[in-house]
Image (cartoon, rainbow, N blue to C red; front, side):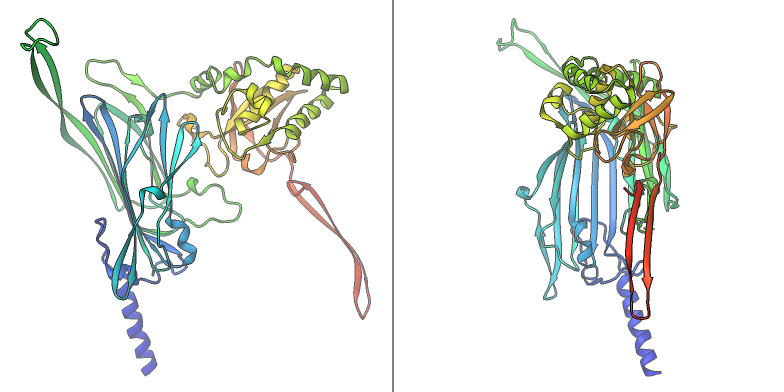
Length: 498
């Protein structure tokens, strides 16, 4: 009985420790947070997000006009060594046509408890490095310093963006539990976004309100004098206040459970609770409406004329010697298909980067013999076309990238290109990145429901399904005696098992 009472007291103390009050201001760390050893709602968690708070708003200045301001602050408790990976951060910054998103006010700190005192270790600027992730995306990467079991880490930053179509999406759920996730988006009436919500978790806060706001426009004019250098020239400054309405979306989820990765599961992004914002149109006073909503037909046309996609398929003269050599070896069209495929997979190496657009001209890829998925598969399309076959590119989203939303047409959903060959009434999907996948067989990463054919005449959806099964057959031949078992085992692998 005495032991039972003691156990009850310990349980009460432990429960009290877990039910800590989190101060959601950056830098306001409590000892209770550092003493926490287990998250009571998920004792298997290697780390837990104590809070994750984001805000997107629009700022106006005379020089740049409207800009999007995205702010995020997140605090994570590292419970054991398996949670160290959550101290590694990547911040994506988009750039295009000379403009780029700017990262500012980055603060990252690790807190540890030493001899009863809270010790802070701050991230240094020299510990942040850049990686060019795609032709239009740079990743700022860093790891929090002095992380160990029991540490609490905090990260806060601001992104300033001119790209209105790149309003930051928000994940309320992650691979570790999230005690509090909150996102607020304030959009002026001139911008209209479609909201796309995913997941099954109910919102603890789900509010949409309309608020009044204003901007001040400052105009400078010069008068008097005879020229710019004349001392009699006067500068007149006028200001104009413009009132407008803004829509405020406020969402929050409390105690979001971890999304655990399961065997054979598609990308977790298909199932986690999240919100995305797709720019539909912009309409400023006294100006025409600028529509950003696109149909799949318009996306097809856009890609066919894109310098890093369709334009690359317009000239393949440099492939003529290769094609003639293959045709000299094989007169049968079916044999030619396999030889053309063999030429690609045996001479060109995939750099393991998924991409929708070419990294450079296909002529350069032809000489350098290496490239991303778009480089190699668009070259294969061109190779088949120059050899007289009917071939088109197919764009898709890989399994890790997520399922396509067919209702909301957006090229940003796609991240990969494969080849579609039409031959003897069949539609044969081919990937030039994998030498072990013969024509008609795509690597597992590409099998993700549907793809979109990009073609001047026949743009449409195509089902992407396994053409062959995963088959493993085991043969055994044994001689069994009272003393032992002797014999042979052999495996036969077919399809994806091979």
